[in-house]
Amino acid sequence: MRKYLDENKNELISVVCNGCGKHLLVENGILKEGCFEADAVFGYFSKKDGQIHSFDLCEDCYDKMIAGFRIPEQRREATELL
Image (cartoon, rainbow, N blue to C red; front, side):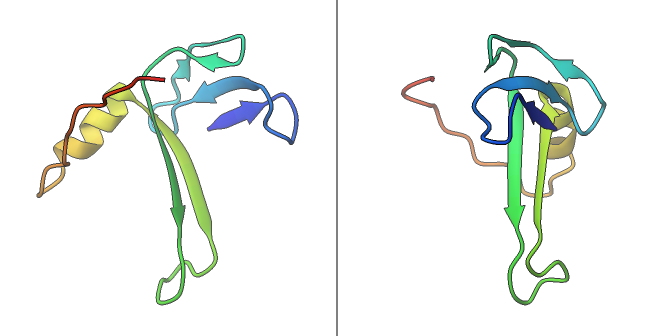
């Protein structure tokens, strides 16, 4: 869950893992820890038509989530890190 200074989302002030409740390190509006950010947009033919679900997971909670996959996630190397 992310919190911003204003509704324009100009400055990030906090990120809390939706899985375990851990407060992730944010300094000067910059997230300084690994974090999985998800936005799921549900459309037609879904039980959640028109809903958008957003959440953040710390690396530990992300690892727990993918450990339960029957088909492993796909991995590739990033050529640039922002």
